[in-house]
Length: 353
Image (cartoon, rainbow, N blue to C red; front, side, top):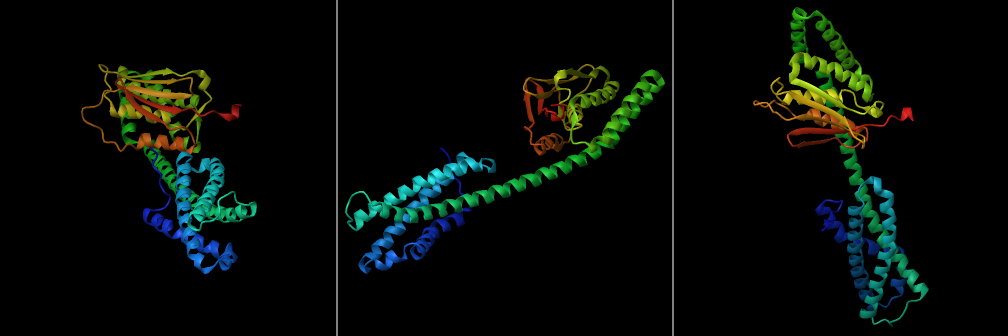
């Protein structure tokens, strides 16, 4: 069952439902039907007032429910045009229902003769009913649009805060002392054992830090560029963990020129290493693969550390916030058959069209 929600707070909604029909009746009586009421015999005025107010309350509630139903089925600012189309149809239908209510009530209360109304009588009453119905529709639709606008602004502010948090976390990752310390330890061991590998390690470490220092200058990078950086980053991990860390790439070259936010893959790999055991007897396998739907999946076997790592969950949240800021599909995170899987959308590079 569809639950209808008013765009107004409950207390205000009750007040407007109580006062609204009275205000519309007085407005219509003064500006639209004053001559009719002045010409009506006094003994019939009370009947006219009761009929008009009763029909007004019924019409208000019918219109309110109809508008809320349409808003529920066609929510959001992006569906405004379609919603207005259905509201216009609803206006015509509701106005005729309002006319029928008044006509039948006049027949029952004032014993008006039965039969089809004249065109003049129909148009006169319909003008008033259309005015009442239009005002009611506008009140609830305007309230809904205001509510949606505030919600959109709040979401944008949240995304902006997430973006700044992501930049802050990125800055911390650029000068992460633990990563630098571990890299230097690995380098020290290599210098004593294998100078050739030490030189290779230094070269890859330079590539990593060069990429880290300049990534803020770009909003997006090609997948090929990110994968090249990831090779350098994973070389450092492989040097540190040996066969305990393994990377498997199953990415089609068709997606090389597609775009992603910089450091996305590095953060996901870092997240896998951070939360799982990495040991030669229990290798951590990180697999990155593309699919025909234009998604990139990054998965790893789950082998959580016995001592839980402190985490505020901001890493994955910040990656998702980047895609939201770019109006892309949301990142999905799931754990299936002891695999932790993250799927991210690849963004088409229109510069190559």
